[in-house]
Length: 80
Image 1 (spheres, helix red, strand yellow):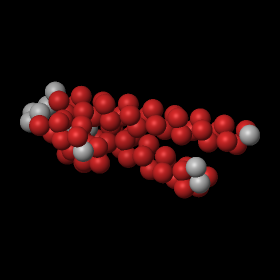
Image 2 (cartoon, helix red, strand yellow):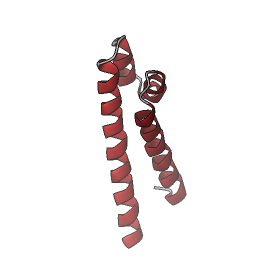
Image 3 (tube, one colour):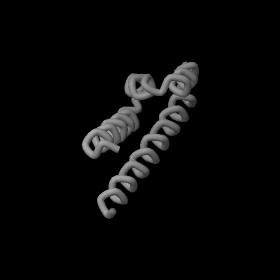
Image 4 (cartoon, helix red, strand yellow):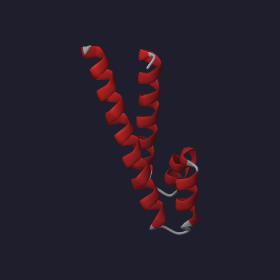
């Protein structure tokens, strides 16, 4: 029971981190030109970290990628 709650808490935290990073990336791309990159990042989430990294938003792109990778690893490891 405790293990399931810990995994659920980790997944909730990682989902929140991913969504927050994604919104921050879209906002960061929107204030930089060309603004169409923000629309692309919003409509095609896998391109968000690539566009962010190319626009100089390195930390945001790395956080997005680490949150996604960790989420997948938790799901695979615990077969949730």
